[in-house]
Each structure stands twice: as structure tokens, then as C-alpha cells.
Length: 277
Image 1 (tube, rainbow, N blue to C red):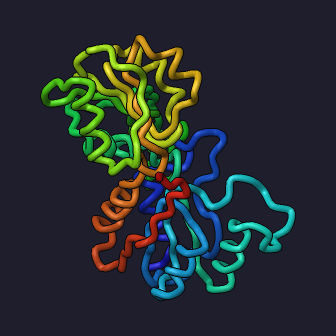
Image 2: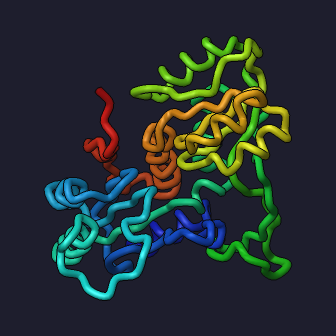
Image 3: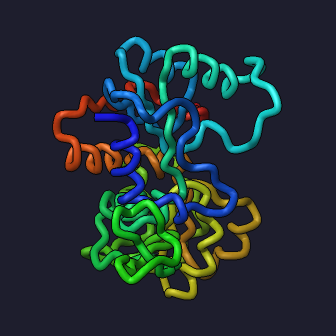
């Protein structure tokens, strides 16, 4: 099949109009009207990941984080992004990103995080409705042939059984193999209702408090937010990479269902730039 067919399937699951305004999801580099020799799935596109695709004879890299967030007036190889672009083009590799559109999609990244934590009755934390067209490539207002679906940022659900704060923190640390877990002070509350957002999701903490969540799990929290929310919720920071590491599993699931014969490889490279002593 052609790369374009693969991208169409991805955008049916996570239409590009679902991405946030700051984002640059979608096609990053390369051609789509060529035959796919396989897909390499990753969280981040790095020079090592591009080399991995080259060595495996794969001509499609699908990442969660976009390789490019800003425009370029020149491509000279002065940083890793430009070197990735140059090497991908030289080796005829197409690079495609599913970022906040996959975060916000029904059964997207945040639902996977909720599943890993073990939540039930999972729903969108900050919902919005969108019209999905037949064919799925346009999630904006459409004709009567489309279908109204609920999407949005974050997720919220309940644990099967309440946990103490310490039990919950240890559970999250183990589940996401986090090098460390940062959190607000312990107050003795039981944790039953949990809100979450992958990546830099602290902007949803106020919403989590309003929904009476006992804990909020995300990848990044600003220093002063710990002061502001310390009495109202167990704010839990597990690391950006750690919170989104299972994104590759969602992409693999989408592709396996649609293209059972497509060669799919998961990167063997840990692209987390943050190390722990």
C-alpha cells in the first residue's frame, strides 16, 4: 500500500483539526504517493531514529512529537532537527507526526494512560464535540453525512479500589517506570477519582479540581503550581516521556487493524532526553 493510505487511516482515528493551535501535527517530511516499505514508530524523531529506519529499510517514521514546530528559512544541518530533515530526504524517508490530535482523539493517548493506571468509567476531562466526516479526514463542521463525536483534553476515571496517597504514588511510579515521581504534600486523603493528561498537562489541573478528582497525573508541572494546588489535589508529575511512552502502542493498534500485512517496528531507542541519577 501507499504511504498516503496509511496516513488516511491514522487521520480517521485522530483527525488533524483536533490538534491544538500551537501544534504542527501531520506530514513533516517526504512524499506520500510511494509504496510503504514499513513503518517505524517512535515518540520522538532523533538522528538515531532516522538511522534506525535507514538500517532497517523502512521509509516511513510515525512519531508522537512533531519533528518541526517552527518554520525554517534555511536547512543547513546546524541542529539535530535540520540534520534529521536532511537525512530523511536524502534517504527518501517520510516522517509523519500524531501529536495533540492523538491526545484529544477518542480512545487516544489519555485513554491509554488511564488504562495503564487501571481506571474505570473513563471519560474526557475537558470535552468538546466535533463532527467527523465520512472518510474521517475533516473533523470540522461538516455535512449531514458525518457523525458527532466527543473528544477533548485529558481524561478522568475511578480506581477499582481506593488507595492511600503513598500506595497510589508507588503504583504510578512502577506502572510508568518513572525515574522519580514529584508530588504535592501528602494530606491523608484516599485516592479514588483520578484525572490525568499526558505530556505538559498542568493546564488541566483547575478542571480536575472542579471535577473533584483526588489526584492528577501528568508529565510536567510548574513549580508554583505545587503551591497553588497543594491543599486541593494530589498533583503527580511522572515525566513527559514517561507519561506518553505508550503512544506507540496506540499507533500500532490502528495500523494492525487496517493493514495486517504492513511491517511495523517499534523503535529500540529510548529518546528520553532527561536522565536520572
